[in-house]
Length: 621
Image (tube, rainbow, N blue to C red; front, side, top):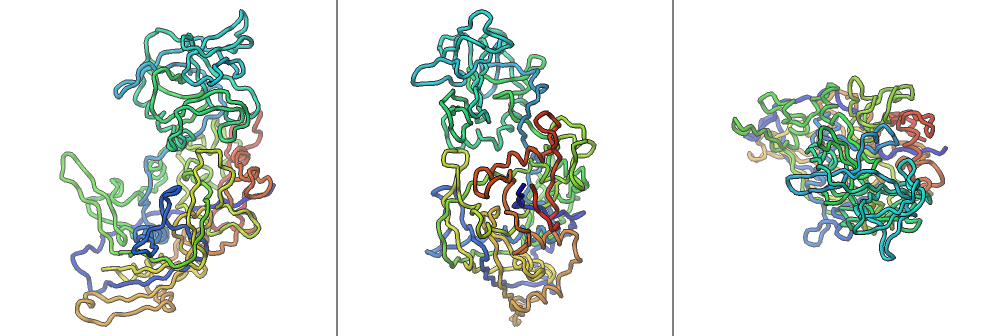
């Protein structure tokens, strides 16, 4: 089966993050430097420069000159510096726990009860049971010509004696009726292409309501993160979505109903599947097969794998009462403060020593309807977590896919994070479809494409970077972070957006003017480093031994990482050609690679992990 190369890989973490007190800003020492770096970046791939979405996506300008604001460019330089120097994880959601889709597991459904919302306000959410659940096939509903059954509608069953068998209506019909004694829950058709769907109906009762626990509401709202409903809600779609056989993205059959687009709010009369314990709702689902939270947060995984030193500078776990910072926070600054009700605010932030000016842009550009990208998905544990040598095989006892956070692969000690994420600097190759070009999403409102301005290779960006009170070693680290080729020939810096498409690779020419100590204020002549001298100067002043993670960073920063002939593409079933729907679909790959429990449908599903960044063979299939 034809394979693919995943667009991203990971640079390993250091064993520990070294922290020391920063220099401060009260004065400049005689052995420290201040000055300016003149930089001219040259694009060696397409560049996506700007911000916004849709028609609002634009490139900033000053006096008619297109520019990149300094903070954006500084972020790209700092990101490389953090990886190069083994610094802390400055930008990270420590509380992150992913949401996973439910599998078809009957055991998960045994305790679920159909119930309707009977109270929903700022203080209370209550449900009442809908009893005698009967499943009705979509073609047995009768409804007005100008409508279709919608989730929460009242319905009336026309059920001849003996027509309800094992909770399913086998003959007769159901009519949408405002005076009906039942409510209907319309769920998504999912992958039921050209097959009948059944919707649950339950009899309205006058029993005692069940209040919902705050934890159940919080888990339900969190389960919506990253879902198609969350994207639909963001596009301000109607509160109900038309359901057709074949799913919601490609409408292939007659309309069968309207389901509710879940946005974290609750409407009286709307049915849900719930779990109840001691008269309280403990779980809320809009369908039998829904989504569930994984286990072990990012912080938990760092701590339990002896990686607490990677926590951001200023975090309680790395704070010893005095300001000590990692290399990047010393150079670029650190934000953070500790508030204690019983003590004065403890200041933990620090102003950096590097200031990046805006960069002017000179080059040709053209319009592109950019293919939509989803949010990064650290929930794919097979790629983001350290699964050990070769991953985990089918022999492990499990009830959920090993790729999930909290699966049996996390038993004993949760798996650690794999490293810092970097994208390969590879665009679509000649003869391949352009993976950056939007395709096949016109009818899917959850996948929002953008009309963007893309700058061509050869575009030049010119800026000036000031530094104050830095050591020669710090200046050497900064120069490598601006121009990685000063350390490793053939490497590039990545800036701007579209990195999953291979955008953003730039080379650089640098010129440095600096003074030692207070020399600038005493009228001393400055020292200068020309671009051709910079590599030797860096080599003489870089006060770092070779690091275990540097081979990873060198490979992923290479302008040509020599990945082989397979297309650099997101997980694919490998059918047809890149750019076709048959190739783009990754369902088959995830099915056979996520470590699913053995079943009649999945006989062999080992957990397939990413190759290491330095592995010559990066192909997956």
